[in-house]
Length: 196
Image (cartoon, rainbow, N blue to C red; front, side, top):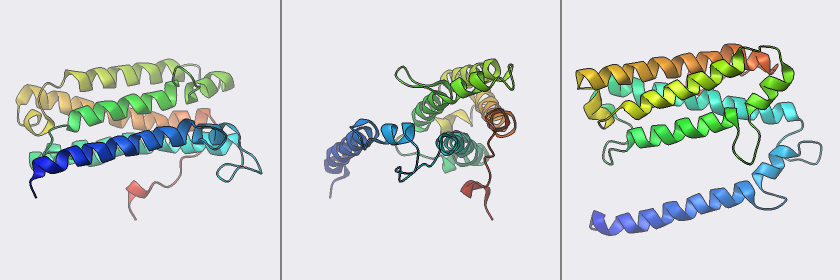
């Protein structure tokens, strides 16, 4: 079968999946956003607000670790190990992921983020400005990379930007692990990406 004929079918399927995810997140009493906002004994997913926060904290930590360990480190070793090489969309996907991870911390226009809890607890007053600055700088660095990732790591100037991005993401993940978790009185614990 011609691959060109498959692309519209795949695109339609992805659009349907995305619409379903958005619906599952937003819609009605059973939307996951509502489920996350109403922990307790009648909630099948979360018994407490701490469990909800831990879930988002782990998503933030794991997302940063995935970018570093699955998307950046392999391609820096060997450009042929790029995460999405046929489409050349590694950086676009990474930028979208970074934006989503920033929203977990900062919150969205219609919701709260972990930053609200950091401010509310007041344990580490320097943490929120640091997290905001770290996300801003990391996203700015990602935006400066001008070539597709496999080509960028072969170009001296662009490779330096990719290495800088890896350093920033690693630092941000360490801040999440060491300071953010402590500031919200939670432990991230084991991560499946950590290995055995």
